[in-house]
Length: 85
View (tube, rainbow, N blue to C red):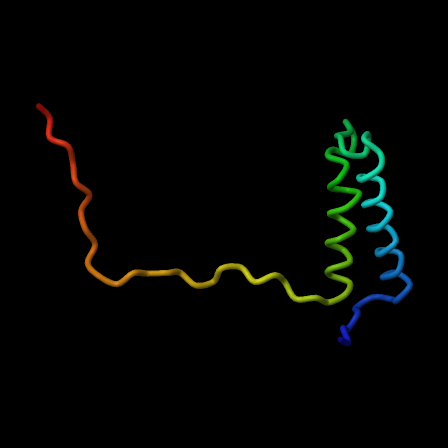
């Protein structure tokens, strides 16, 4: 499948390497699964941010969210209330 890339192919290659390196770090180094006082949650910066950047660089479509709202036909009913004794 041919995807159109918006940035230079070498930058896409660097993003792929950063993503794979971040995945390896998070999988193999327990300290990379924690949090840092300056950076915050490390897997966010090591895995999720490179993955999002690669997603945008590859020009992939956004994931489909539930766009349909299911409306069941029929009249709305009033909720029953308890009687106070």
